[in-house]
Amino acid sequence: MTSDCDPAATRSHRKLHAQAVLWQRAGDETVAQDIGASRYFALNGAGAQLWEVLTEGAPPERLAGILVTDHGASQDVAQRNVTTFLAALDQHGLLEEEPSS
Image (cartoon, rainbow, N blue to C red; front, side, top):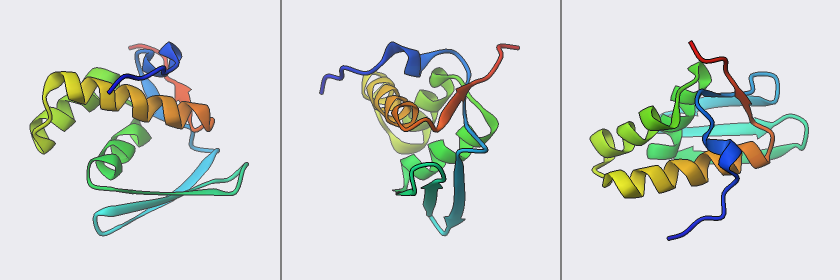
């Protein structure tokens, strides 16, 4: 699987833009609404887990590590999936860059 993702989506620390989205966890699923565009997103499994981590902010390496450790993905697959996931969220304006610590 190849991806033409925006390299900006993989900048160091990324965080969900708190004022752009409302979300709620229901069991192992996360339902979110993009406030500005009135779009709904449903995530389950790994996507829901990454979403929750992004509420606090995380570098892509941490997100990929979760996919490897908790979901058995290979490092290459995990990195590609994280890049694609972040690019999709970024495209919808749901991410903001967090200052490096």
